[in-house]
Amino acid sequence: MAEQPRDQIQGSSIRHQVGNKPVNLNKAGREELMSVRGIGPGRADEIIAHRNQHGPFGSVSDLQQLNLVDPGEMAELRDRLTV
Image 1: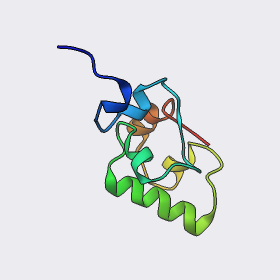
Image 2: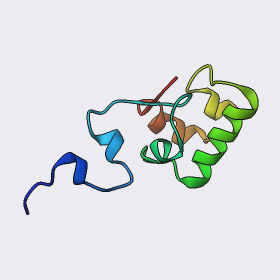
Image 3: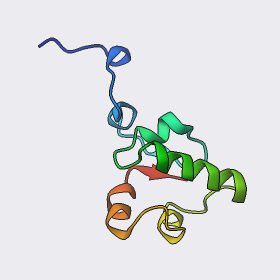
């Protein structure tokens, strides 16, 4: 199977895979948040709603403290997100 150019590849986690750059919790839109494995539409909406109501996240760990992710998920997400 021939490799597709990066701009033609589709998938839920492609942005995270390309370059392995962490996604910024304070700047990312819904689609970019959903590009991170473990963040689906509902969780992306919760993150954005919290950010809009309470201001920017101080750290990625805030997700766990705010009960937006559980401890097991936090370990996986920590390297995929930034503030």
